Structure formats: C-alpha cells, structure tokens
Image 1 (tube, rainbow, N blue to C red):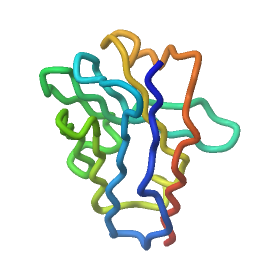
Image 2 (image 1 turned 30 degrees about the vertical axis):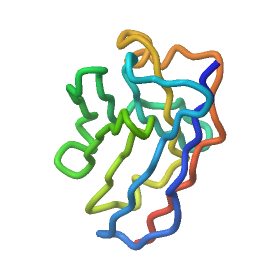
Image 3 (image 1 turned 90 degrees about the horizontal axis):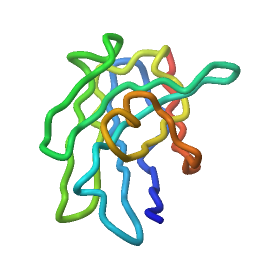
Image 4 (image 1 turned 90 degrees about the vertical axis):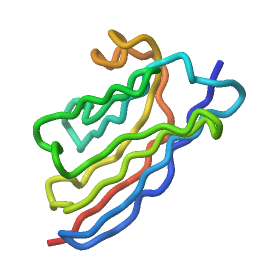
Length: 121
C-alpha cells in the first residue's frame, strides 16, 4: 500500500502562489497517473489537475493557466504549483494515484489527510 502525504498548504492573499507536494511513502507511483483534487465543506471532491505516468497533464477549466502539475519520479513526488490564487481556490487539497480512469473518476477507497489552502481576498 502506497501512502501519499500532502503538504505545502497555507494562508495566502489573493494573487499569491503556493506549491503543494504529494509524496509517496513506502513504494513508488511512477507507473501510475496522479491527480490533485480539492474539496470544500458540503461539496464533492473535484479533480483539478492530473498527470499521467508519461507526463501528460490535464486541468480543470477553473485552474487552467494558473495551476501547473509536475512529477519528480526520482523523489516519488508530484507537485502542484498554484499561481494567481483566488478566494474560490480555498479548499482542502488531496492527491491520489492509480490508473488514469480511476484518477479521472476519483474512485478511491482511501484518501490522505489533505492540505488546507486558504486564499484571503
């Protein structure tokens, strides 16, 4: 079982930047796609960015041009660079990994603790 640990969240003013990290502990996820998701209270978790094992990336329309996902397989880590942050980006951010279809669907039985991102106006 690969444990994923999210970090890098915090409080930032609108227009600012944060870089989130998703580290795989215990094994490697280099053969899997990895997705970053976010969730606000009372709402479903939504996929915001994903990266394939080969490095192809996809983004939700709401973050295109502002967020960038990348992976460092040597470090077993996937990053989410978030620029030009908006108050509506405030959420708990999670990562998860698996076959691409599962990452797209967010069909996982286990999630990590996530990392809180708060953007003040």
